Length: 146
Image (tube, rainbow, N blue to C red; front, side, top):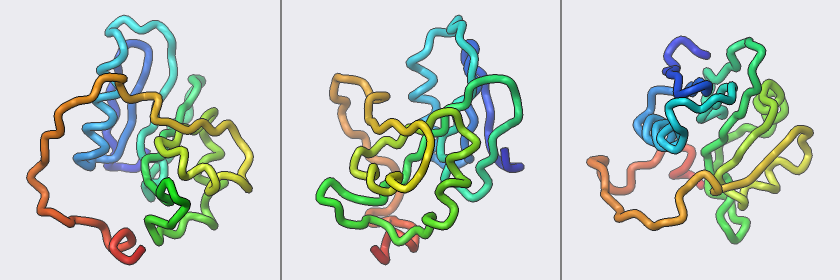
């Protein structure tokens, strides 16, 4: 991965993600769902649209997880992030790609590969919302423009 990606092991699964608070939370939540002695092997890359995302060359299966929301449930753009020219190159290194949002499905239509749409990774039970300490309305520049 890029020089600043974090990697850890849970059972036979290696997790790799960029050091961003939300990526840390998502990755550790996913890992918490696996038993410590999980015997299958593979690598889960969370945040594959990150500019420094790179698959670690190894013999294991690689699952890439895409977390950006490009479209809302009505098909309206939520972001002006320009990934169209890089889409195929971004998803090619992974054996399978999971996007948390079914609304993003149309962004993958011209691409080839194994694509799955979530959010099946989240639990069935609803959790109480605990707000973070970020100021309200904090969005990245490309999200504010959309």
